[in-house]
Length: 336
Image (cartoon, rainbow, N blue to C red; front, side, top):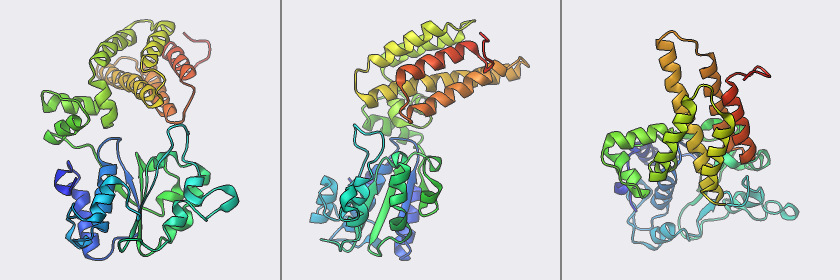
């Protein structure tokens, strides 16, 4: 892949072109934006640009055929260091950053980034899933981020600055990525395996998903549309049947099987649809000068539930308590 194949993010490209040309690139970056919009692809293309053996970084046009480009594409380049959250772990283990407890700073990314480049003139470190850095893991990186080696570039990839510790944010230049719009949105969904008929449908799904392309893809699946229709019907009932709502949501999530990411995606879909539903209800109530206290409570409760997913809350408990609170419609105890 080369820069011509990247959808959107022209402003971000221009910033790096200028910084490299002026030799003011810096050593630590925090890429933030919704999931699936191309942050990892951008980071990989930047690594290819910096490690290309035929073209200089200032050309901002990796050749794509040299050994360096081929190894970056295959993710086997000795000067490309990558860390990601293991699928079976809730957070990024500190050992991946500074080595095992009995041999700290003898291995791990923070050690390896200081080694001399093996092939090129730089080393590039990419930390995916930076939202899942524990306090210990984040603290272990502070010195490296504050004083990175002159021949190294570190890139942390997350969804928002608020998900990172202030000590991390203050040591990195934040580069924000937004979801592509228009025809780029259509193409991005197509890359993720979904074809939609028009730009309006693509942008509606992406907006409903809060810019998260992975969630937008889930929202566009046929079974998703059927479930969403039933969910909205449940939320329109007066009073809302919390037990029935919890049972329906639990069944839908369980249909994703035991795959944790798939289950989380379905939960995001559930709470995302609820958030959009109550936002529309809140606007309608305000426009008609109707009481909106219960709607506002339900909206905030759904937003809280959406955030709880990323904190690895027990899913069964999360669904049950959310449904009960949505039925109640207030934080006053004993009110139904």
